Structures are given as structure tokens and as C-alpha cells.
Image 1 (tube, rainbow, N blue to C red):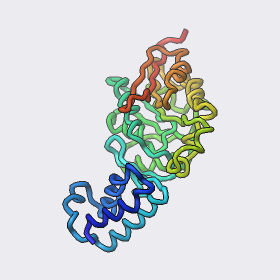
Image 2: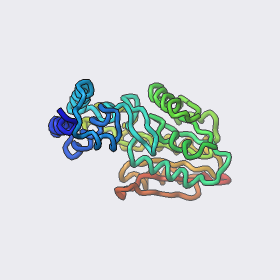
Image 3: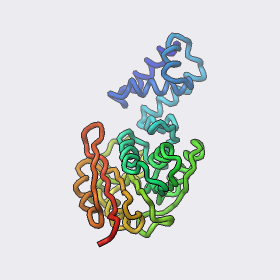
Image 4: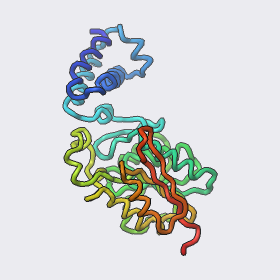
Length: 282
């Protein structure tokens, strides 16, 4: 069996579960089995598929066909150029969240020194990507889940990006405050909608990272209640929001803020909301 034939078999087995994503999924799995990149994959299409690599491919295909996320099967996913370990301990990094990093970088250009905290860090994707772009910043990865924080620590260590680690939530003032930048991709799915999410999300990603309370805004209320205690005057809080939530989140952040910014994702959805703390209260 050639690599081309192995890929065709993978596509056939994956199609019922993957639909439009079948071709991309099969390609990723074959590249992972062969431990190669896209160039190597294309160059080896007519070569025999080694038996050991084919056995590995069959196992990975079976896992994806049963509904396991591709990112968990691979054990990693790329975010803003960083290869991050991914598993059940945290949300899979998604491309729309890269916009959160870009907006945070834009709003803090030239600000030094800069203390940053990524609240609800999960894999650490946002804070680590920011730190990779701004090695002069003092970045803290914060999560209330010990398992998520362990995963973030593993990613930071493997990438060699120095960060602080903090297990906490917004119920109390944050140690290390005030920060010049608070960034967060909090849970924002309304509780009643979680059970109807696609199984690949509902059954494999931690509910605590999805469940935003009855209206999806519980985490934003907590952030809004505490951000002025934890954010330096003139600092920014930059948040990812769910579809249709931007107005409500802006209203929550408005007291004590000057300047509000919004940013759409590539699909045209308002995805990021940012507010600047007033330089003086009152």
C-alpha cells in the first residue's frame, strides 16, 4: 500500500464523521503517522506506507471516526505560530482567538514595563503567544482549574517561554495586581446550550471552560466587578466574546472605563471587546 492509497483509505473511513473536514483531517493524520510536513507528505505519495506507520494511522483514524477531536488525537495544535499540547484538560485553541492576541498587542504598543495576566488561560495559548511577541512583558497565566494550569505550564516549559503561573479566579483581587493588561477568553456558552453543542466539543472539552451561566455572561460579570481592582490606571482589559454578546459586555465594562474598542473576526463576527481603565477615578 502506498502513502496515497493509505490517505484514500483514511478519507473513506473518516467521511461519515468528518464531512467537509475529511480531506484536511486525513492529511493531518497521514503527516502525523509519517512524522513529516506537507512538503514531505506530497513527496512521498507514491512510496510504500511502512507497516508500523500504517498501524498508527489506522488507530488515529479510528479515534477521529469515533468523534475524538483531531487536535486530541494529534496531541498538539498550532496557535499563532506556537505548537501547543492539547488534551481534555483545556479548550482546544481556535483561530478566531488569535484576534484577541493581536488586539492586545496593538493596544499595548510601546507600554513598558508591562505586567500581563491571562485569566482562564487553559492551554496558555493567549498568554504564551503574547509573551512570544513581547518578551519584555511580565506575563502571568492564571486559571481556576489546576489541570488546565498544569497543561499551560507544560506548554510554557516546552516552548521555553518564561511566565508566572497562578491558580485563582476573579472572586477576589488578583495577586500581583495591578496589571497593565488583562486578557481573557472566558466561558461564554449559555448553560442551556451546552448539551446541544457538537459532540466533538460537548464530550471532549471541559464544561467549566464552556459554561458561561444562564445567559453566557457570568464570567464577564465577575471580570467587570473586579477588573478595576486588578488593572492599573490607563491599562486595558481585552476579552473574547461570543456571538451577539459584545453590547452586553461593553455595558458591563463601561463604569470606570475610558475608551472602548471592538474587533471582528475573519467571519465578520464581533469577537473582541476592549476597555481602558480611567486614569483617575471619579
